[in-house]
Amino acid sequence: MEDDAPVIYGLEFQARALTPQTAETDAIRFLVGTQSLKYDNQIHIIDFDDENNIINKNVLLHQAGEIWHISASPADKGVLATCYNKTADGKVVTCAAVWRMPAELEPGGHESPEDAASPAHALELLCHLGPAAHGSTACVAWEPAGDGKRVISLADNHILLWDLQESSSQAVLASSASLEGKGQLKFTTGRWSPHHNCTQVATANDTAVRGWDTRTMRVWGVRYNHSHDQLVLTGSSDSRVILSNMVSISSEPFGHLVDDDDLSEQEERCQGEDLGPRPGPAPPHCFPRDAGRHAGNLADCSHGFTMLAESQEPPQDSVIATYEEHEDSVYAVDWSSADPWLFASLSYDGRLVINRVPRALKYHILL
Image 1 (spheres, one colour):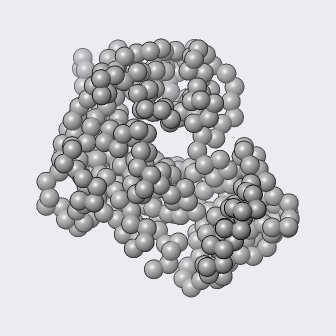
Image 2 (cartoon, one colour; image 1 turned 90 degrees about the vertical axis):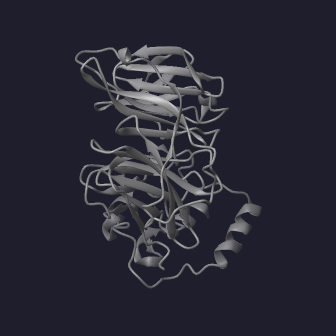
Image 3 (tube, helix red, strand yellow; image 1 turned 30 degrees about the vertical axis):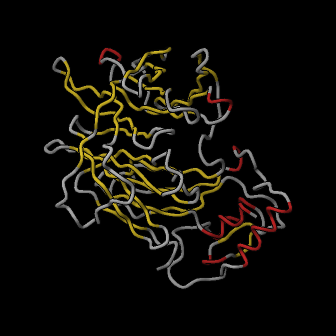
């Protein structure tokens, strides 16, 4: 099978919550949460077999309600957090809780995607993150480094920092802050920066992006790319996933910096692979041929898409590829924790798509 071809997995219910299993760095594993009003909701544990290009899965029951956001502990493979709908005082609010997967759910004991008869396991509730008085919780983000004991939750206009204690069975509010301004301001999403000793959090509300110092919980200006440096993923209601090369905010704007020994090893690995043109379809919408107007002189690479020649100026910010395997709004995109060149996207109709960064761009960044 062509190694750049997408792998598609369909869920029974609608879904918009996706996260990699952050503590798992050996296997390529994603968690997907469903949204169903009629049936018990589920968390699908998706394992991707990169060698055989197939997906295996396990299913966990999430009976608390529709899942609007999901995140995994960076330190414990069995712990995760969800934001879900709940009725309180006649109103529907989105709450947050920390859960543990059942101990009998061992890695490798997967169903096939076609096997729907196997019973699903239930999650164990560890603790709730805050009362409904704080408002609806948009998302929960774990501190990227450390022991997985600190998380932030965004509830309406509040940013809350929690300390998890006693095996994550108790959550203590350590500090908090609120958005100030005209109108009914509400957070929509946020991510914790892995840099600067994990003291910074970026949040979004409406069209504004804010940075927070967790030591003081104050607002300050930020231009921050928390994830894969120059490689940026976006998903939207037009059902497309866009992979961009944002060198203007990269920590290595002129490419990956390696010493001579590392370079020799990478060259040897690349010589063992055929990087020439391959049969089969080209990656979708890769580097339009008129990109020279923006990026200077360009050269042709494998798969027939265009990349910057090694001897030329570095590329400008540009769209690398547009992926159109979805037919509904794409609510979540995320990178694999085990493979930095592989990512997943999830559309509201329950379609999960796994894709890779184009190989020619991968080796251009490495070399």
